[in-house]
Length: 82
Image (cartoon, rainbow, N blue to C red):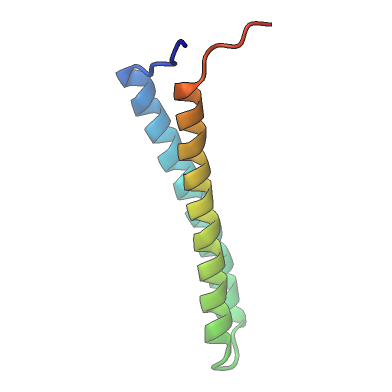
């Protein structure tokens, strides 16, 4: 079974891409968070904001896990010939 091997340069690029995606996702969450804070008008809204952040964190963690799993599969898979 032939394994996909990443060069040092490819690893650096992949890490930069992941970090940029993470940064963009956090910017989106921050924008939505600011909107929710601005719209909050009662104390109980704090807990809705908390729930929103917990949900967004879960999404980001799931994306990170998916990224790691995909990388693992690519590294372990052989080249498919059609």
